[in-house]
Length: 197
Image (cartoon, rainbow, N blue to C red; front, side, top):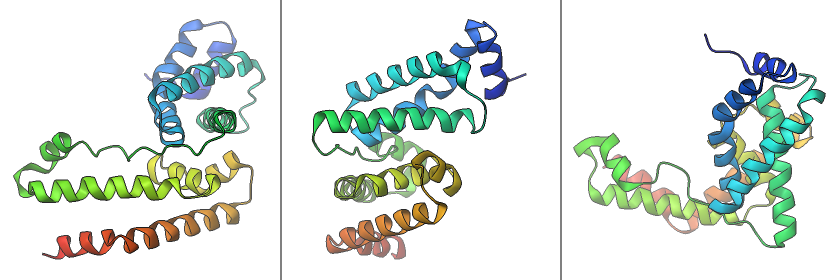
């Protein structure tokens, strides 16, 4: 039987060290993915993950369960990413979305997708990553949390400390800017034409 996050938190606060290790195993990859997408550098993303779990462990006795454990963890990681960006005083590098590896795509899609399609998809992903760099931090973060991590609008609002309507506006505006940017490069029309043919 798998324990819920809240049960593992309670056990950890009660002194069971293995429970917190289970939380790390469960959430290490999603936190790394978030940090990597926000910062764009592997080594720094790994540092954020370590610091996130260190801070979470230290603050665990104060965790009241008012939000989901995962939301609480995401908030810690996002704050650390923002601190890193401020310290570096530079625009974060946004990596291409996961799943761009041509070999993996070829294995998943089978022989129905040509190499030209795979290259076009790779180019589209690279263009999306470049366009994401141009977005304000709040819009970029909202898109990452919604599109890549599947959080609800309410969870994003809680993480960003803003009203639900603000999250929806940030997401809509950010996606609109991305679409216009990609259209100016001819990327979305090209993909639509590829799908139609």
